[in-house]
Length: 334
Figure 1 (tube, rainbow, N blue to C red):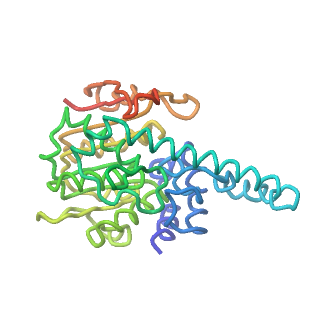
Figure 2 (spheres, helix red, strand yellow; figure 1 turned 90 degrees about the vertical axis):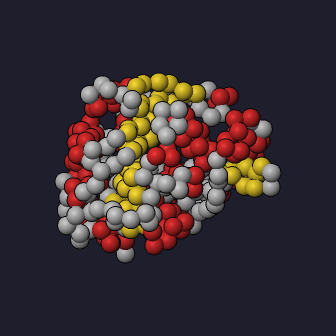
Figure 3 (cartoon, rainbow, N blue to C red; figure 1 turned 135 degrees about the vertical axis):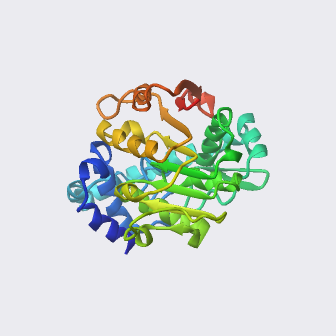
């Protein structure tokens, strides 16, 4: 019911501002097909194309990445001769993925930076929903993705004291892992506004609901309110909203965060979100994005500073596993 209502109501809003832009249109339509077909229990595994680009799943069968037209064409692989060849390729690809998963686990297990993060932070239930990119350390399973979240928070902690944050706002929160990690480690963070496009917000809502049950307020509960505000108490509240409900939000925010998705949006959409970030009297801002951007689909993340009046501090940092030779840009308020 929740997903269907989100899809239905999205058709009624200003899609230029509150629906996915060109970068995400295809991905989101494909994700809806996969959710309805397979559900969420393995969205972090290798059997579904639900979370590709915002979760930590791996792609085994390219047909899961197709939209309606692609799936119709893909039926050619069901024909007897093609089916034999394609299934042979699937088997070979699965062997390569299994090797990658095992080797990645060894890298994470033996990384001193990973071990330092494990000793510094708490990691609880990080491999739900079929996570395959994981490793074991001292008889406990850890999601590789969560260690990368921890590394980001550790880096940001040099600029912000997360122990002083109560109200937290995140746009484009992936599948909710960053929020889950923050709540696990900073019990002072009690009021959370989590915004994402359809169907990503559905995935994130259900992921967080698995961990926090009725503390999560979904679109069904919030859509008919005239004003969306946190309760004036110290109880945990997680509001999961699609983009158009931001117009109803009435609160002040201690910390706003976005990782990667801003550069994947039309600039008109970013400007609209920044208008609300300012309206909420946001005290702290942190943005993270990736190197190796493609100007055909995204833009240089250093340009994000202009949306915030060029007042953010810009720095480039190495990824958690330095051997992968990746860097991330951090833009933070002073």
